[in-house]
Image 1 (tube, protein in one colour):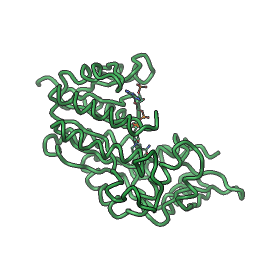
Image 2 (image 1 turned 30 degrees about the vertical axis):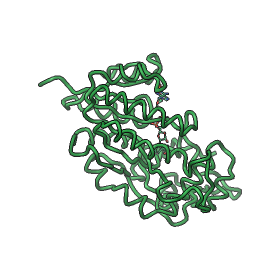
Image 3 (image 1 turned 45 degrees about the horizontal axis):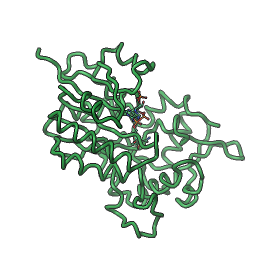
Length: 316
Ligand SMILES: NC(=O)c1ccc[n+]([C@@H]2O[C@H](COP(=O)([O-])OP(=O)(O)OC[C@H]3O[C@@H](n4cnc5c(N)ncnc54)[C@H](OP(=O)(O)O)[C@@H]3O)[C@@H](O)[C@H]2O)c1
């Protein structure tokens, strides 16, 4: 067998990149090798990747020379930015440009750009449905990723644009889980009315990305949207009730109320849920469960994900 093709993975110690790294490392006879990028070679997550057989390299996305070194000699790369680490869409754009240009310089044959919709394609900034944020965005952590798609096209990099979905893991790690109400029952807040939320187990994003790399040039230049299931808030609450053995109610609130919750990013997330609600047909159509399962036959449903993870959801 010839040498394996190296895939450089940003975010390899985190959710998306971690799922991809684990999926490739588990595929021992497969065509790819993992080059995991981290800022800290000594973290537990970095050491675990090395122990599992990954090449682990240090790079920060603010360091062009380090990104170029991370791409040198690689076949492909998984590129993702980390909005919630800094809350800056402008920084995401700078980092995406840097990765696109470094990918071009390294002659990468297949890049996956982890993207989301530029919601300004659906709403002008003066659209009164929701406030404009940070001067030129409707949903900052979506819009900059969508705007950055063009940076990869302009750089002439063979890119698959991977439209990701809401991680169900947010119920564990992002404060999105059910909360006790005054009557002792649990309320699951999802400000989307009867609309469906495409969701996915975070681990499955990387597994789907692995499937995209396997398909290769057939998917460069394409946008691929992934989800494990499309569910309404009521359907999610019913699944949570079954998994937790306690009644969980869907609590719909107006987007304005959600935007006013006051936690960092509440306005961005309020706009995001409203976008997903108000343009639900487009948003769901862009994320095919069938395509996702073809890329990743182990794709989990929400009930399957809850079966393994419900007890980890904090209910305080
Ligand atoms: N939560 C959701 O539902 C959801 C859904 C769709 C899309 N997203 C998007 O997903 C993105 C985050 O991806 P994720 O959830 O996979 O990330 P994550 O799990 O929070 O973190 C991934 C890893 O990235 C590394 N990292 C952070 N800043 C870095 C930098 N400046 N340079 C190099 N590496 C850096 C860190 O590794 P080290 O500490 O080892 O360096 C971190 O462990 C966000 O932009 C978000 O908008 C989230």
